[in-house]
Length: 371
Image (tube, rainbow, N blue to C red):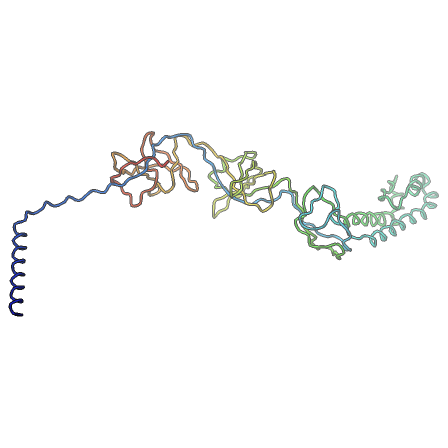
């Protein structure tokens, strides 16, 4: 039985193989399928040349135009201030920033003024005998001498003999000593040179202040300057007084400034020139970063494209009869994300978006503009 079943299966396989071979031999050969040509869909723009403003953008940080560092020229205890002596405190022009105890110095000043007064009084009898014509003015000087008021100038000698006489009595030396002490007395008080805020305070009331010690920093909050590096090639387009648009890095707030100064030195490495923009306004702070837009000139018959569309530095793709064609252009100004070019004709169709792997002669299909 096993032999019979094996023989039947073998026979069946032979019949199936025979029929399959016959079917293949009798089948007609199918025509070869032509390869499909790939056509890339692209977005395009139609060139319309116009006058494009060339705007130079640069970023810098604000610095107060009026800013002073406070230093002590005398020694003493820090007594008081018109306001809390802390960073951020606002002072009006002329208000007391800092007062140092001057009792010792004031006592020394009065002692020296007293010495001068006594010297003039003791010299009056000799003046009356030797220089009677000068006695009246010296007597008036003694009569008007005030220990609390600023020291008055000495009477002017009428002749050389009188000048030698009072000089021999040490009048001039003692007078200048007193005047020097009076000038130094002023240094025990520091007053605000303009309205502004204290940005740094390095001493506290009750602290012993020494000559040369830094006391703080004070700045005017009404006027700031922005230092910007500008390429030397655009220097001839910038003039002092030219208006400049400024905005913060988030472009939420804007201000208008003007070119205040232009440095006369060019950086040899970067070929940049420092331009100083003066600006005033609300919400400005020292150290704030701002971006400036300096409108240099208008470029006529120009067109603006994305920088990614520029090929080999000076070429762009045109779409002509559904084929990409490279054409030469003249880049005249590079922006952060775009470039202003010349050399295209009105009505030329160019790519609106970069196509990966694009090449000269590539077949494309227009599907619309980038909008």
